[in-house]
Image 1 (tube, helix red, strand yellow):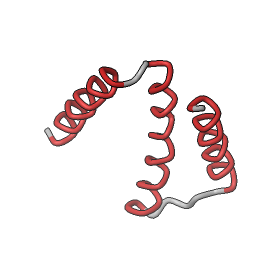
Image 2 (cartoon, one colour):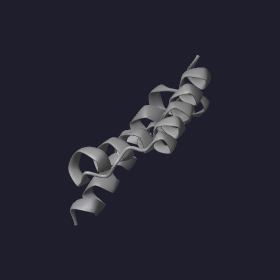
Image 3 (cartoon, one colour):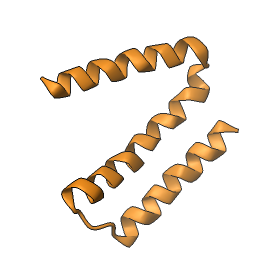
Image 4 (cartoon, helix red, strand yellow):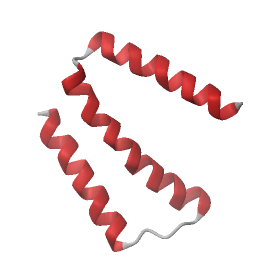
Length: 69
């Protein structure tokens, strides 16, 4: 139930963002969810951050920065 609640709240937040920002500007930030997931897994589940994960995360962040300009 908590998962459904979080998903519902994320949909409400996403719809709110879309009322304020063009989808072409907002959508790249969805990619930051991968960064959050990696950090969550590392901090709470003690999963290791490998070089591959770090490089992939840096690529995602670089893409978001490029598209957000």
